Image 1 (tube, each protein chain N blue to C red):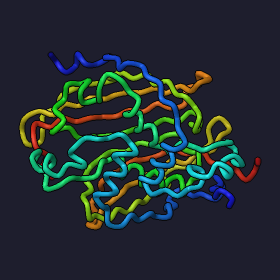
Image 2 (cartoon, rainbow over the protein chains, first blue to last red):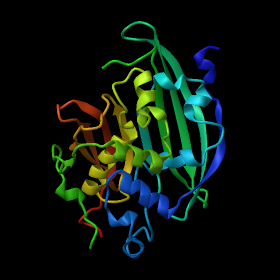
Image 3 (cartoon, each protein chain N blue to C red):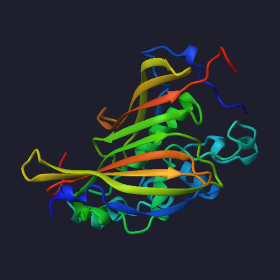
Image 4 (cartoon, chains in turn green, orange):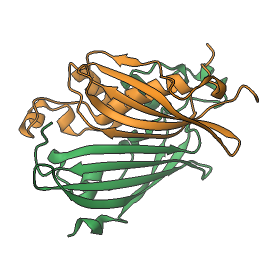
Length: 153
Length: 146
């Protein structure tokens, strides 16, 4: 199948509850001690009125998504897949207690000749996140790159 | 404790962010991020798998470094002010590496009555090799209207 045929492929829509404990765990994993992620009393007094999700928190969608990982959906060989790029557009704050609906699709897919021969496959996934008030809160784009084989730097 | 506020009027093009250093990345940190994020790709936690796939050892997820970088950004521009954040993964971060996150304002502008800054950011290892490069746009509050 030509790689371009992946373009437009939809990822099953899923719900993603934004949980306070998960935000705390995520903030701790990136070593961020900002009280907006941990301290409910502090967070309530801010303009957000609650615990805020860190900028890259929606990467935790892995726990909620259905239909397999990006690699599986695109039929890529996991051993040779690199994460090339990640991009976020933020439209409204995401708070603990929100329930997001995530709609994803493959936005682009193409091949390029590799620097050391062979070919490289690029697949771009786009996800749109909507909160329980149907407001669009975030768009994220992930670019995966499958190299011909082992990557040497 | 009051949240830190960066006002639009106090920023100039060329201003640098206070840098953030994450010394000596450990396998435990990588595993902690796997658990927190749901990225259980064995290449990041299973040394045997990583070696069989041609690597010297396990290595950090790009998104962990992107998380360090976002931490530097939010410490700088304040919570909830990011409008756009883009990262590109260039070199991998290995256990034992020290990551330093830096940023610099490239543009300052007003659009539709709102004030924005654009900045270039990167995270480098102890050899000065960039592991993650990127940019962001943040909307900043003004001193003129509170």
